[in-house]
Length: 378
Image (cartoon, rainbow, N blue to C red; front, side, top):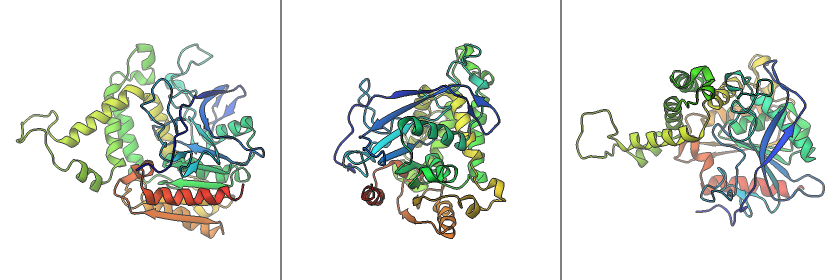
């Protein structure tokens, strides 16, 4: 079922150019950069109804609606954002942003380095969640938004929303972090490293400068996506979708596709390798690894979240084993210890980590109710 009553329709991305240097956590800087965005709804007179949507690993600024050139592909959170939907664009001005270092229009490894006239490639600096938030605050300034009504995201997007509350506490009223975590576990970092190793080991990677060789490390990207996709689904979901179903009645005694789950993973890997940039994959997974707001405070998450002034909706899914509910409860407990206003929802859903993208009516009902309350304060 559809969660709402309509679509934002055909949308047109916008490129926003920033000419002043952006200092990065690594000590490097980007002298000038662009962010690709989409916007839905109308900004009210007081500029108090703006919502920022932050994306996860392989998503982009294209949050809702469709593009004229390919109306068959809706935005990645189209079931969440639109007229009458949980994040209602009849009431909110919603901005989707593509992060620095991504491959969907914002400045990243595929972009031309003005110093050399060639793609940045391997020379593009490592970026962090905090760097993305610093870039996003400049975007807010350019849009005339002094304070977001909410910053919202799932997974890595939720980490960005949390970071907003720490870095710019006066510029965010509500934080909505779904299926997220205060930092990655060792297991999660391990999965990321296996995926990166698959990419770096591809002979077509050429140390990250594959653009100059007119190659694409598709084999590595395929494996990276297959690894990632396994972690996004729950065991229950995979069992229900595929079980041990086979393409033929009997074993064929070879190493090509025999099980339906193999076919599915190879399809996902092939599709991903056609549109995603390998250097971007390395950058974004490393940003995931590095996110740890309590690192400089001896691991004290309560102290890390002490600057926050926002109100919070924290959501988790019971079968999400990559970002399990226990990690969300860590955030909730630290927020409560700081005396902050927090709503926590733990949804019993079978879909694993990907549940935050899907159309579960209980999950959407929670988000809708939360944004209904925000709308009453505008």
